[in-house]
Length: 218
Image: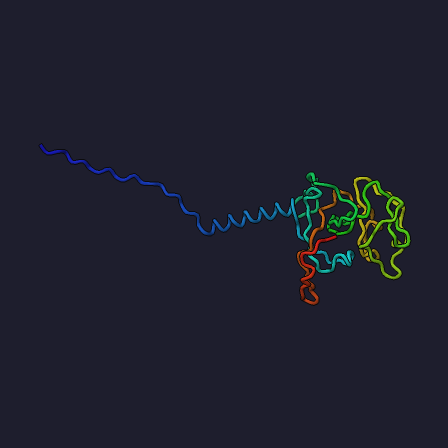
């Protein structure tokens, strides 16, 4: 008796994942990189360049700086605007001697960089080109003055700095628009602490000063 023939079963088809196209992988990588860059810029550190000479000789025209936004608590803004939505908690508040970047209280479209010379509750005064805080002379090694100078370098105050603000001045005292002229800086305007010079480039001379690279801002 002949045995019935058994037909072999068709091999089961195995589903294979569809390989991502190179274009899609590249776009995803770019999107992730942009997101990380935005998060770092918003919450940790941001690069700035300031063309003004108001902080000479501490900062030279052409210095590019990295600003620590984490130390005071990141200032939250509507993207591509200077409109503040508040800030996250930070490690500390600005204190005397800090070089800070902030939104100009009189012109919110501008960012300024100055040195904190007094904080809320302290009394600041200028007497014959000498800085006094709470009636005591302050060691002020970064300040420079030119012959003659502006009247508010000769005499200013006494002025009590309101709570919730800082009094900021440029190191180049006779060439600086600062709190002596437009008042204290609200803490909510402060963006961060200038920490390091990462690049210096003179567009006029088209040359690089290597000795300034990596210099801490003090």
